[in-house]
Length: 207
Image 1 (cartoon, rainbow, N blue to C red):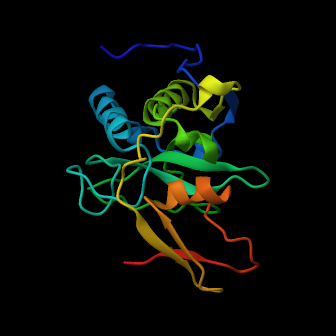
Image 2: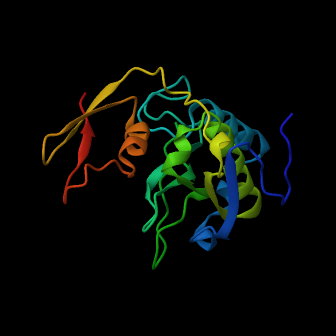
């Protein structure tokens, strides 16, 4: 049974959860797009299976790893001035959603927002932590900041340590890297999106 945390911040060993401000542009979110109970539990189950990865596919969809029929969870780039990644559950999954245009702005499709530190992906409980963080954001309409707790016990053995290695290359300098996926590469390079540190570099996966 899914635990209802109400307004209490979640607790997952090795992680710290902090409540931030209101989800940006939530006043431009169409309330008819809010997931019902069944849809939301399906989204949480998918996050628990795949996390927010964008480099693999699962049984839930051929074009995106973390999605249901109506919603998806993915990364929206880095949070300026931090090592955190902006992850969001948004309207539109297997069934494509066309964002409405208003007079002076586009419709918001952000159901939840979680800012997670790149180092947190090295903890084997990260998918559970992400699911609970997004659940809290869903219930409160707040941004959640998810980081590793202090102490040697905070980092568990990575669940991706046995994953098949893939090749990534910087388009500017040609340097090659090996990692299971872009998230793990970001952890290795201490930057997200992954960067080799040169101005204008763009690291891409070698297909």
